Amino acid sequence: MKKLWILLLLLAPAPGLAQTRADSALIGRILAAEDRRDSTMAIPAGLRHADPRIRLIARRALGRIRDPLFAARDSLPPVAAPSAWPEPAWRLRYRALAAQRADCGALQTALNDSVWHVRLRAAAVADTTCGAAPAFVRVLAGWVDSLPRDARRRPAGGVSWHAGAHAMVALARIAPEQARARLGALATHSDWHVRLYAARAAGILADTARLRTLARDPDGNVQEAAIDALSKLVGHAADDVYLAALAGDQAQAVRAAAIALNGSSVPGVREAANDAFDLWVRRANESERDVRVALLEAAGRPGSDDRPPAPRFHLPPDAVALALGQDVRIRVTMSPGAGGGSFVVRLRGDVAPMMAARVLSLVRDGYYDGGNWHRVEPDFVIQGGAPGTNEYVGHHHYLRDELGTIAHPRGTVAMSTRGHDTGDAQWFINLKDNPRLVRGYTVFGEVTEGIDVVDGILEGDVVASMRVERMRAGADHRAEKAFIRPAPQGSSCSDF
Image 1 (cartoon, one colour):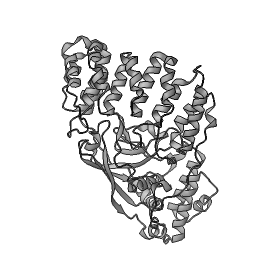
Image 2 (cartoon, helix red, strand yellow):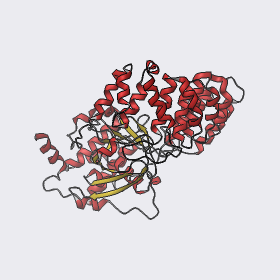
Image 3 (cartoon, helix red, strand yellow):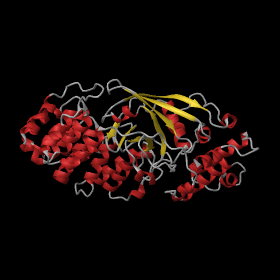
Image 4 (cartoon, helix red, strand yellow):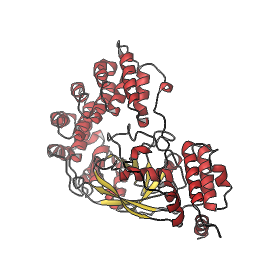
């Protein structure tokens, strides 16, 4: 109770102080200074201000500027805790499977669990000894054989391509002959997710001919899996495949090819890597750094030769309102073909006002509509929002970190990065408490409704839409209105 009173005192206007247009403008300048990592701009004035809210925003900005890990964050006043969500009962069964890898009877029971996350996990963890259990193998083979040719839809609580694809990888590991007899059908399936898992299975089966074919797949994620597997199996004996992939335009595949070519003695590799690097520089996407660095290394050059685009600094007009407590909620509606349903996320502008405002701009621009959750780890996180449904490309301008005091409890929403200040606009949602993530990832939202929908998401599930459902002013409505102006006609989320 004492902490709550302290928080309310800090967030309330100081006695006798009405926030003015100038105060709101000062908050905007403080946030802009933090964004530019410039401690000389506006922050000294904020630290001297009579309003404790402005002093707190300035103090937080200075701490983030001086220390990438913001170790002093624990000295800040506590913020409102996110919603507390109990875990689903099935997660205990999911976790128990890790200790049952060689208990084929228990795993077979899990293959018939009422929740598909548990079933798929049982297939994934099965020890090779389960290949000697005919009933276990029969269930997996049945999943593969019943894989639908059109896997674009799945019923709520059910699967589409998932069972057959996961079963193929499990069979490759525990019953290779069964897998070889079925691999061809999956390697030519119409759904790229199935072909991706076929590439993984082909790697386990050492089917290099199949991998060479899949390395030329139209989908970059399939190419990446095939190239990675081929490189592990034959190394530079497949440099012709990797060289061909360098000419592609999908970051994950080009990156995999460049890594596979690193150290090659084939003539022309360095020149090809240099040419490809120049092409990726011209794309001017900060978040494609991984592919550029991999190309530089394949060309025999240091990563410090990278030429990223100049960073863009533009404070979204909602940032000050969010910093002052504006309540903004976004409804995420899943596609009917992905089981349907929806959930609501409240933006945490009290913790990360600039990131929350930038995400809000992206939502308004339809950036996330039609995207999918490409990473689903049911006892960790789900992640999505990438243009190429992979880890290696995101928004063309980085989002700065705004590390705070929320310790990544279940249901919080945070920003994917690959290093300090490299937010790529991909969301991840914590499915359990993940306190270790607090050191490097910014929480910018929390799930307030529909956590059961979040728990039920499977890999590849598509987001039909994200829409602003509610925007309510914070404690000082006049201050927000004084700063916020409507965005100009034709403005876009690309105008960060």
